[in-house]
Amino acid sequence: MNQGHFKGKKFFLLILIIPLIGGIIFTGYRSSARKQEADQAKALSLLNAGLEAATTEDWESFRSQSDLRIRDVDTGITELTTKTEKREEKTDAPNGKKISNLEEQIKFMKARLENFGKSQRNWESFKRGFNNEMDVIEEALKKLTADIENNNETVIVRTGE
Image (cartoon, rainbow, N blue to C red; front, top):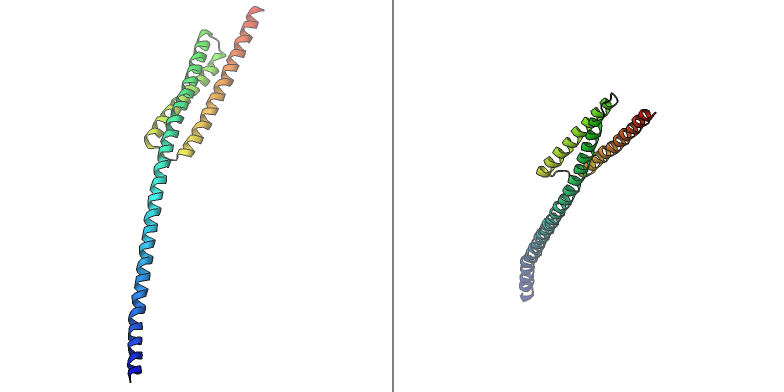
């Protein structure tokens, strides 16, 4: 009779111990998963903070370089305006329109740069687009400068004849 009583106690203990062990394992797993989530969130916030700092540095560098490019174009436009004002020919009317167009484009680029500084959204897209547009403006300025200088030489040759 002792053996039957002992088997019943084993069975009873086994029924109590299995859920207890399962609960301990499950609780340990959940706390481990929470810890991993917390670690991942912390790593992500550190990574984002690093990216924001890099973006700020990139923005400041980009801003100063862009300001220099805009100033160079402004100087070129001023020089072209001075050259065309000295000559009062009908051939300068189309060039005057081109100069006015360049002035408007550079005003737009200044405003665009200023507005981006306030919001700073879509950084890579903005930087690529802004640089492309500045390249086009600078190329147009070079071409217009060459055209005006070539016209100036033609005028001098005609006058000298």
